[in-house]
Amino acid sequence: MAAPWLWPWPWPAVTVLLLLPLLPVLWRRRAGGAGRVCVVVLGDVGRSPRMQYHALALARHGWEVSLLGYLQSRPHPDVLRSAHIRMVPLTELRGLRGGPKLLQYVIKVLVQSVQLLYTLLRIDQPSYILLQNPPGLPSIAVAWVAGLFWRSKLIIDWHNYGYTIMSLSHGRNHPLVQVAKWYEKLFGRLSDYNLCVTEAMREDLWVNCNIKAVTLYDKPAAYFKETPLDLQHSLYMKLAQDYEPFRARAEPVGASAERSAFTERAGRDGAVGHTRGRPALLISSTSWTEDEDFSVLLKALEDYERFVCEGAKLPALVCVITGKGPLKDYYNGLIEKLHFKHIQICTPWLEAEDYPLLLGSADLGVCLHKSSSGLDLPMKVVDMFGCCLPVCAIHFECLHELVKQEENGLIFRDSRELAEQLKMLFLGFPALEGKLHRFRQNLRASRELRWDESWDQTVLPLLGPRE
Image (cartoon, rainbow, N blue to C red; front, side):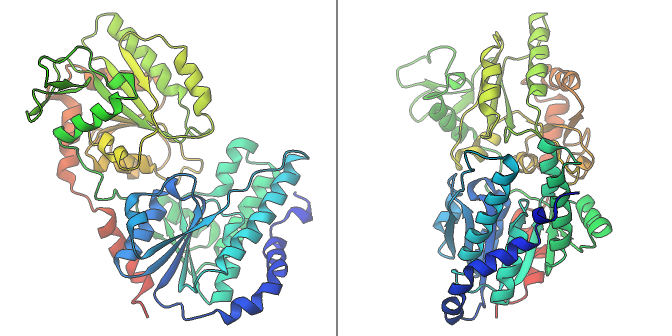
């Protein structure tokens, strides 16, 4: 059992006491909160697409939105262009350089509490505070305190549980993990409304936390769609300037012709076609964290390389891994030690506008996301499906709510199974037959709801009319 002084319940009270001198001034600034929502991300806004989608949906219905979080990555251009969305930046806190890690963590949480509450009390009064969880410590309690002050309703959007993510590093029985679990259950009950990402999480919130939630599945935004061939060519030529795997294997014929590894244009205004014998484009989006074992993909690629060397009629591969995270440098080191003849691996950082274009140009997606709780779904697969891109995804408990085996993709459990799936799907590539083509056709025919439609049906009724 953690020591009493580590319990999180005093922290919101501490932040209120520290900010008491400001409350009279802030109280005089209070105005009606009608028509305003504060969307809170205690993380990088640019890497929180679901919360950006919330902000855009609210703005589309005329709400004035304060989007609060760290601005480490550039948010989507639609967010930056919106006249109804105001970015409210938080300053990222760096950990202490010395002292016990536990003390560093406690001080960080205390400082974050003060910073977040101070920022929430300086914005225009909102009718609702829409909070992403995780991270919930300390944001849930602080948002609840701010909601009391503003008389705002608190909505928590449960993407996962913070304590299960902490357990990846510390183990499930660590005192901090147990405190975080108790904290999320206690303060999560103080919200007015709750959203979650799967039916499995909705049931778990009710059974284990006594929290009633509404399931809002992640859905792709409208700009996630198949990329026309001419736009594919423009993207490949752009990427070829910096990344060798996208460059043509041979010079184009004719002075005005241009060629990438995948496409070619006969002349300046000519039609675009695929290059003969082009490689297959495999894409995996990763956060380079402990819940995604990237070595599974590397081992599968090693097996694929061996199949080709043994005479299997398989295409060469260009494997693109997008994203950034703490383990990227480690895995890049492993990639540099591989000496493939038939596979090229590229780890670019893509601009927000280019990522959907690349998904819409790829032949197959691979997802390595393993849910720490077994209750959330990978948004990267949602985006891939929006682009009608079939997926091979690693198994976990509720993945079946998204990936339908033998319908829109395949589920694997280890590197050997993934290698066999790659071999089977790419056999005879690029012929328009076989499972890879059938999966894409099924995705085209599914016509599932997009984010805006799903949001309007699920979230808008909770908010009611703007007063």
